[in-house]
Image (cartoon, rainbow, N blue to C red):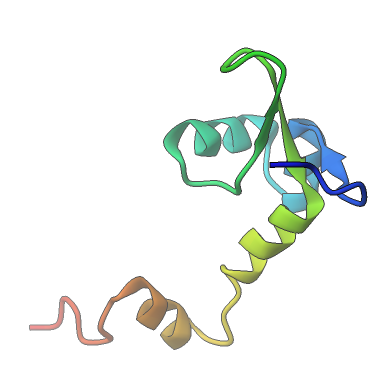
Length: 84
């Protein structure tokens, strides 16, 4: 895979700031596979993790909802869940 010449890469700290979370949160997400995709520069596992701004925008757009009903539907929840 080749990097697009126009791709802007951010450090973990820069990406975390853009997302409004702490750097440690982004590291935990990366470890657990919950956060945005990242690019590893350097040696595997020890190289620097970088985030493409386009990937951050995609990740955010996948988490954008018009209402909590839309969010629940995307998560596969039903509105009457837990009601007895």
